[in-house]
Length: 339
Ligand code: TXA
Ligand code: MG
Image 1 (spheres, rainbow, N blue to C red):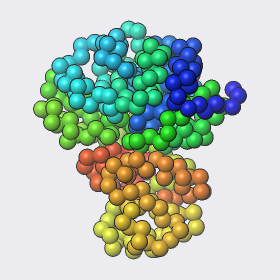
Image 2: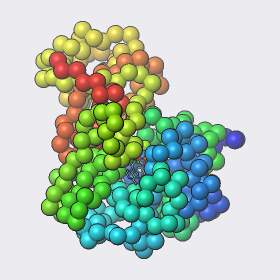
Image 3: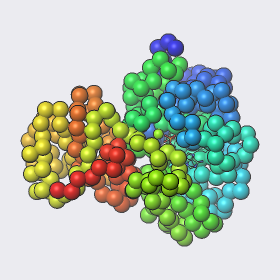
Image 4: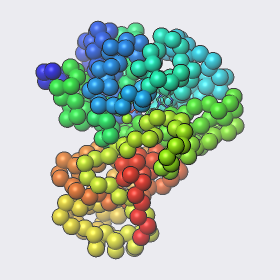
């Protein structure tokens, strides 16, 4: 395929992107979480192109993006009352709900499951493309399978040039990590399959019970049943080896002093920088929201400058921090060092 074109998010450009979607093409789309690779969720041939562009395993289901509650009801059924309450509070936003799928969503989109993950994005750019095309849009993160998700149009271009015809540049993503994915165990119980910007604490204000699925923080054991197929793959990982390091300030700084070296980098909190004099130390922010925003772009940056090993200071595990921790524990293949 020829060079991938990058266009703006002007009305005229969004119309063009929507035309391509209607024609069964794949388009790189800005959302508030990360960039997605969007195609008509009901068109098997179009969805097949997404899997091909990403080299994605065919049993990993895609999230379908919608712009209205009518569109939700056109693709899902048996929607619990709790789902409506949650939608009311968190949509449009960084939250995906897994619900029974209607037949118009083909099995290629749902990874062979009878359910579909649905999200109404906050990004105007994404919602306008859905509205203009009139199609529910299947969109996984726009990275090559296994790599960190893209948070700028340039990241998408690097991974996808020549693999898709078009990218819509909507600027840097506000959130920086993918949406929270939830399913419903019963009418009062939410299960978090993937943590994100919408937190367990926030969901607890609406649901009686919020369960964090085991796969969020721990490695799947052989033979264990997967609730979210994406959980079983190594993920979010740059070419470099990523290792999370847990320890108090002084132990952490001592560890860094003895482990810094050529092509060995540290990704730390903003406040750590003044205690660590080295060109190989980078910050991914102080609080969880900053860390979520910066994590993937910093991992990509370190890859670009040739890092072989990246030690990352372990984030908080509460609030949005749980999403940051979850991405890091997967990027590192569950390798956490205590110092
Ligand atoms: O923020 C996001 O969610 C981004 C943007 C583009 O919207 N999309 C995204 O898609 O992260 P993807 O494909 O990279 O991740 C989708 C995750 C996977 O872990 C997948 O297994 C899970 O959602 N998922 C999707 N449909 C599911 C289903 N029916 N049942 C269980 N898990 C599902
Ligand atoms: Mg992804």
